[in-house]
Length: 343
Image (cartoon, rainbow, N blue to C red; front, side, top):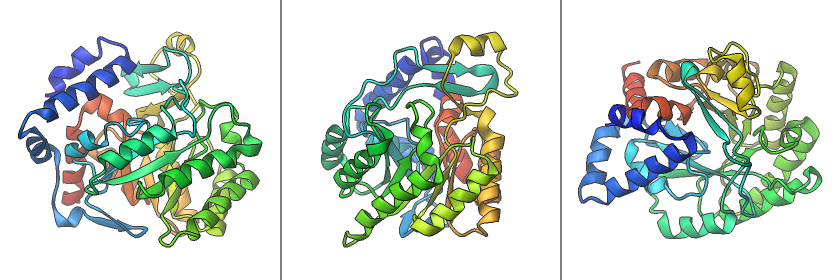
């Protein structure tokens, strides 16, 4: 179905195509029997695909990355496409419209996307209400949390605290996002001192709960090895559950798209195939230098089963896709799972 839809979707802007795809999916899944059919087409129920990680049992190791379902509106529909887990967000305490449009751009020659969305979302309260009404416990859901654009870094911890406390009863794990390039100065929070304080604060809140939940850190692919060494130390010191590597890159190296086209697009985070190599390098470095001390969820440039296998071989325990879905469609999820079974 997707090979037929893709040329049509690529005729409209990427952001509009995204909304149209989700509306169409919801309409199709209202038809009696279609959710079952979609699960048969895209799902993988083999026991050997199950992964147990930080106290959670994942039915398979392929997840939907954050950014696709920013507001927690579509996790029920997306759960019919074979994902082992779904990450929603990034959510911020207050609603925000994000950056002006256009803010999402395709790079077809590179099978990539550039986005400068800017944490556009309807806010924490709206997400919590949807989770209260829509969760059925059949899919593992992660909550990706961030800070509002207007919140200074000096008090950013409060935004993360608000998100953590409100979402705690409704998600299975948390992801702290300090690595998006599209919120001014957000990446400064990746530096060792502020990041240690932020994660330490969240862990204090977490361990005050009767049943603490896994907290992971999502990092940028643009960190140096010295900074990655700091990340390893921070994970050890704060005892968070693991790392998601990696977010979008600000690099524009080795693109097939013309320099003029890239210049016209302007600022934003680059995802998809152009970030594949660096993402794998980051995973391998973290895994090797830490001696496998913590789990890594791989994201960045996974557009084929082979891409996913490379991430797992580099040291990842689970993988996530987003841009790959735009170019390959939902059959990518099952194809990855089938490749893992054959490995």
